[in-house]
Image (cartoon, rainbow, N blue to C red):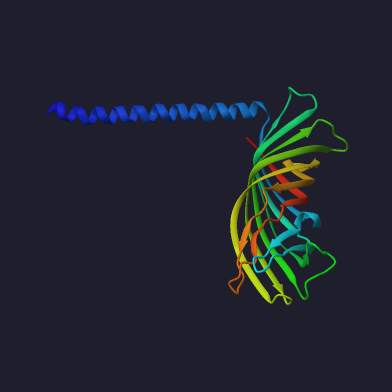
Length: 264
């Protein structure tokens, strides 16, 4: 009888001992990490940015191969993507002593959202001076770049302003639409919210300044690139008007960012 009482008691004590061991090791790991960050004079960073993006015209010319005849057209974009962007930033900023040219390094997560519509005309590839009568093309785009980001802040400082460079790798979550109309061939084709994901990256540089109470402000230029965007299309009349549409994603962005640094 006593043995029956001792067995569940021993199991309970063993489970408590194991859980305490895991908890202790977890606490030690967290403590060591926090202690290391404190020795590095690290800060948690939370930031938000407002920017403006623009795409160059040459990056948005699209070959539009039609199955209804033996010819091929091109969508020549004359109104490129140009719209504001919103961004968020979160991570850790640590001071650097081993490299005399660097003052601190940021590691974290960066997200930038863009939404806009590009417009253009249909032209013949063999004769680009000839435009299809009353033809037009619209490519609405929604894009969210989520990147593992790093910033290197240099030791050089003048009037409290410090230069930095940054780079990141991640994914571009996008929805690309397409609407093409043409009176000459009497076609009208649409596609909405063709959601896909592409590999993405960013490269940037800028200037930052620290204000009171651990507030930081910066201005930066960033280049956001990714794999070519992809979509497939069928005409509303059941004719296959486009085998594939693959605009290049080459996004130039100028932004202003505000950061708040919190002690670890």
